[in-house]
Amino acid sequence: MAKTPHYAMVIDLNTCVGACMAACAMENQTPVWENKWRTYVHDMEIGGDNDELIRRRFFPRLCNHCDNPPCMSVCPTGATHKLDNGIVMVDDELCMGCRACAMACPYDARYDVTYDDVDQGKEFYGELHHRSRPSVDKCSFCAHRVMRGLKPACVETCVGSSRLFGDLNDPKDEVSKLVKSGVAKPLMAHLGTRPNVYYISDIERTT
Image (cartoon, rainbow, N blue to C red):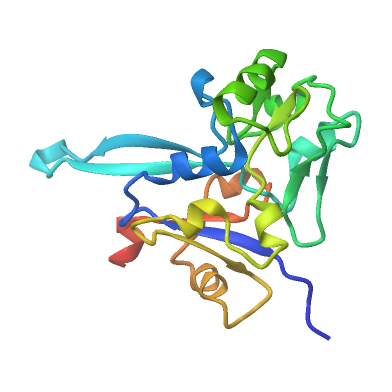
């Protein structure tokens, strides 16, 4: 019997051009007018010491869909929950907006959706397909797409092909191979959250 998928994402910082934010916002109708995003790309300059060439790097940040998510253990209503496939979700109907999850998240990956955001969203995006009340929101790996056999919107539209989405339980999957090889590494693994978003940097690429 085949194992239940355990989804993860690998982001190659060598080819990232930071073009995923708009696709994510349109797919998930996030309050961009308040600078609230499910995936946020930091535009950074690295290098410069000892006459080293200064380089531009884009660094995407999103929910890491941890195997040991601190956001879930502090949620008083059970709104934050984990699917069998590893995706961490928020149930809007159960969320009371206490922000305990946002404070517990070491990746700063959650934000508030207010009544004003809901009202303005109706004007900005037209008829909303999912947002009708305030809650705390975050990346869901586009679970609504994944369950239909599609890739997350950020992966589907990534012009640099820097984002890969796959199944850690499938040894033939490219994501599984990259993670197992150690080339793709998670952020702040020492915290014990066991994140499922991995990054490839120029350092790992050349070693």
